[in-house]
Amino acid sequence: MVMAFPNKEQLEDSLRGLVKEFGLVIEDIKITKAGAKSAIRIAVDTADPRAERPDLDQLEELSREVSKHLDDAEAAGEMSFGAGYTLELTTPGVDFPLLEQRHWVRNIGRLVRLADGVERIAQVDGDDVVLITPDKKQPSVRRVRFADVAGAVVEVEFSQAPAAEVDLVGLAIDAYGLPRAEDQQDSPAED
Image (cartoon, rainbow, N blue to C red; front, side, top):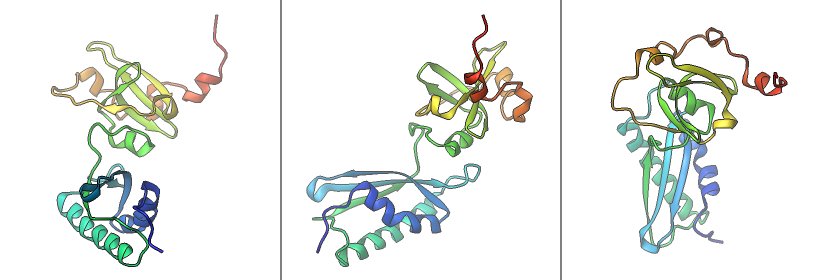
């Protein structure tokens, strides 16, 4: 029995092992179904947030392997892509939301747009992130849970960060003198 055009989850399940062989993870899959103009866009990144992002040669090699894998799956009747499709492999762009800890680690030192404004990522610790509220003379820091700032997006900077902020980026976590975010939420408010 031939399956219908695969959904995002089916593609991710089918490709996860292959992508992992390249030392990468699938960040997102977007499927656009439009007959002969259908497209599959797969965003991949390194599993290690401190490693360099995949280069064009890696993406080209992975693209060939993914294409072969999908062609083989279609020939075996496991998936059906209909009249054809375009396959695009890419890395997440700057507009990709920071959803997992490794996204935050990769962007330490960068500005991010949050629901309540723009702040700089200073450090990451467990389920917490230390953020710097920009101020040229006296920036402040706060520690929050990832869950409280999920979906933040990196802000593109065209100028150098102020020295007062740069000095706060990447310090040992205890150097900030901040309690863990969960401890801040659990303590009763002082009058």
